[in-house]
Length: 222
Ligand code: CTP
Image (cartoon, rainbow, N blue to C red; front, side, top):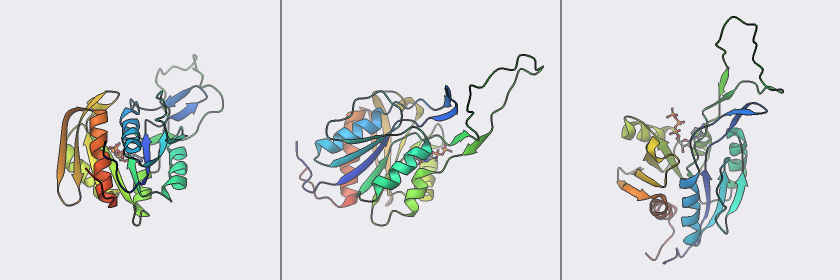
């Protein structure tokens, strides 16, 4: 395998975040972390240094990665602030929860059997947008965002690239969640786009790492 001549320090995020309601319940999503872990592996295979910031997932750490385990979106933001500083780029594959419970209950949320109503409600507050936060202060560093869309994908992905100030954005659909294969389109700032149809996540990860190398100006042999 041809290695990149100049190794980069890359931060990769992966998996879901988990937002606790009480000590035993949480809000989260279907993300398995497979895409982010495949990207971390592909970057390591190319000789790069990888900080892998992972939400709660059951996946082995790619050998050589510095793994930072986090739980909530706010934990992930704290880890990103620490590790993005000295990096050349960020690949933000994590599926970050947009909302969290307004208050985490100290004890288990109990049913109230005597109340007449069978519905309850949970107040949610918005989580910070991690990508937008880092996008505002990225300077010379490069950022690849992800967009998960179920309709009107291209328009929404391009809007996210603008709003979050990323250098490119990888659009995929809900069928990519927890799957070994994916279909993904990578949109670039100059209007170029690359489509990867029904490929393994490992194959797509290699292409995304190549795209990141090109963005970071790392000369590569292949
Ligand atoms: N993202 C983030 N912080 C959030 C939400 C999302 O950094 N609070 C990042 C994701 O990691 C991804 C990109 O933003 O790289 C787009 O995520 P996506 O879930 O597609 O979009 P949202 O911004 O959450 O918007 P919506 O859910 O309304 O589509």
